[in-house]
Image (tube, rainbow, N blue to C red):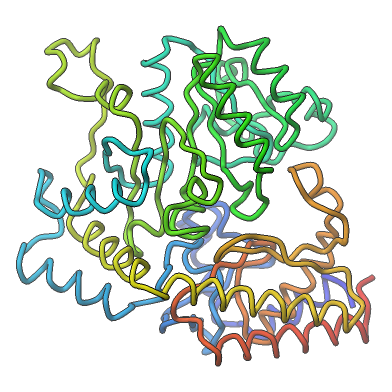
Length: 452
C-alpha cells in the first residue's frame, strides 16, 4: 500500500465531507478555521458528537481521541457539565456579564487549592491569551526584553512564541545551540531576534545558554512535557527551577495541554516543581473557551488597577468574555468530577490499558510502533528509538504513522492524523475494545501489505 491509495479510499468513502470542503474553501480561507485542522486530501466534517464518539457528514462513527485537542476531559456533553451550564441559564440568566460574578471566586478557590504555585489568578479566553499575558507579566517584572523557549514547544499562535516550533534541520542550528526559526509568514524579525531557543532535556547546554544570556532573558516558558507527551527529565526540571531562581529569570509552565491531564494538579504536581507563573486552558473550561494565568502574588499584582492610576505602571489585561459564567461553570463541573475519589485514577488506568494493548499489538505484528506519554495523554510513534526531545522525533517514520492513521479512520478511530491521543471519562471498556480492534485490523493490513 501507499499513502496515495489510502487517501483515495478515504476520499471515496466520504463524499459528503469532500463536497462540503469544496464549498468551504471558497469562503473560508483554506476551508478551515485553524491551520492545524487541515489534513490531506480534506479534513473530515463532523456534524454530531456523543460521549466518546464523533459522527461525520457521511454517517461514519468514530471513537474520538482528539477530544477538541484534549479539552473534553469528561467527553462530549457529560451530564455534570450539561447540568452546570443549564444552571447558569436558569440562575444567572446570561452567558456573559462582562463583569465580575460569584462563580469566578469559586473557580479561583479550586485552582489555588490544586495548584500550590498560585497565589492569584486571572482568567483569559484561551491558552494563547494566557501565555501571552504570562510573558507580558514576566517582562514587566524583570524589565528584560528577551524570552527563552524550548525547541519544539508550542505556546499558541502569537508572534513571540511562534519561533522554532517545528524547525527544519537545515535552519535549526546545532543541538547544543539551537537557532530561532520563525514558524509563520508575517512574524516580525524583532521576535526572532529577541528569542533564545533552548534544547529540551539537555541540561549542560541549557545551563550554559541561560547563564550566558541571563541579563537579557525575562522568562523561560516551557511545556513541562513537550507536546503534552514527551516528559522532561526530573533532574532537568529541578535544575531549571534552581537556576532560573538564581539568575532572576521567571519560570513559566505552559500547562494548557498537561493541566488536569498528567495529574489533577498538572505536570507541576507530577514533578514536584513550582513555577513562578502557569498558563492553563483546555480542560479547565470543560469544553468552553477559557485560559488561566496563575502565579506568585508579587508578579500577578503588576496587573492590578489598584496599584497605580498611571497606565504606564500597570500591566494591561482585559477581555470581554474573561471568566464568563458558562466557561467557569463547565470547568468547575469538570474539576469537581476529577477530584472525586477514584475518578482520575480510573481515567489513568483506562489510558494505561489502551496503551498496553497497542504496544502488545505492535509486537505481535512486528511493527515499529510504541506509545509514549504520562497520565491521560499519549502518542503513538513509529520508531523503536527513545524519544526525549524535539530532534528525536526525526527518527519517527511519519509516513508509517500517517498510514496507520488513515487505516484507523477507516476502522472507526479518530485522533486526527499525526496527533496525540487524549482519554476521557466517556472512554470505557467498550470504547477501549473497539479501539484495540481497530488497531489490530489496521496493523494487520500494514503487515499484510507493507507501506511502500
